[in-house]
Length: 314
Image (cartoon, rainbow, N blue to C red; front, side):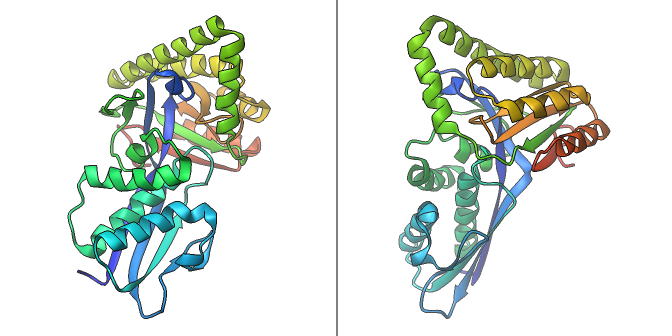
């Protein structure tokens, strides 16, 4: 056993299928390497376990309620591996919280990897997902598992509720721009409102949800066939359906229009909606940088660029 451990993970982006996935339609998510979490674990002479993070630093036992999932995971891993030494856990993250980027799952992934590195033990994907899911259940009640899978994956995931994850290759000659509205996503409210819409207009709402599922299938095909234009079209059509389902808001609409006006092939919101982030597809890195700048000029809090497959590392 070393006296030090380190673990990393990335953020995640839902490319297609948000909201429709709740009703049994497919969604596509993938790791977003432009944002990441690093966890460091080191032995301490202090009396108590310590946590160091931008959100809270101090005794782990006294960490605020919002960090209860990490606290429980830490205690669970220490107990399971019979670790008696006091430890300091340092978390560094560039993933904004509550933006649909899977920050809580990414932190749990990095912490679990840091523990296994410290213990010098091999960590299987099954054990990693089990530990992250344990943390996610505390954070979100009934998580789909997609955040846990995507933040620890190297490939996109095609996901249908209740089915095993289907991993496939991300190999499309294009760049993805992600822009943060700076507004916390309103996932719970949005999910509730779609459910109300279903009650009031079951036929129309059901058709829209089905169409979103169909577009997700088309998007997967577009990625496999390296067709940025086809992928962009599915993104645009999804966005217009998400707007009808009241998932978007004025600022997201403005950023999406800005991206399109600057030459994006396609653009849509990502995640829960009514805040959070939007995504846009560009053919070249230069165009992606131009769109990124236009989005920041239009008021986006932050932007990132990721190459998709052919140019994964930007």
